[in-house]
Image (cartoon, rainbow, N blue to C red):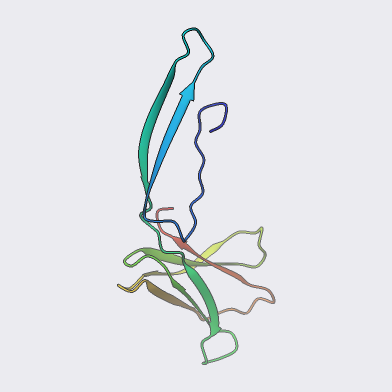
Length: 122
């Protein structure tokens, strides 16, 4: 908890879906006062995505971007010619019931090309 009262916590893939927290504050007045508040944090996207890239097998300029993510979630495949540059969408797809998702980039002709998958609505 920072001095503004902001609570920061980063989950790990090994964390349970429901996490319980309690926050206690107290002062040094007379009389000394304190309060406790408990709450749960529920991780709805608790599947750690894994991302891979492979040639499509049809030619040297086609690549398949694949991931295992959240079942039913919509993802967009993006590319850029440098990491700090403009990310461009090239395909959108919905993850299957097992979380598997893939898209084909048929025109990877740049000397350097970087990929990422972004969950829609995030």
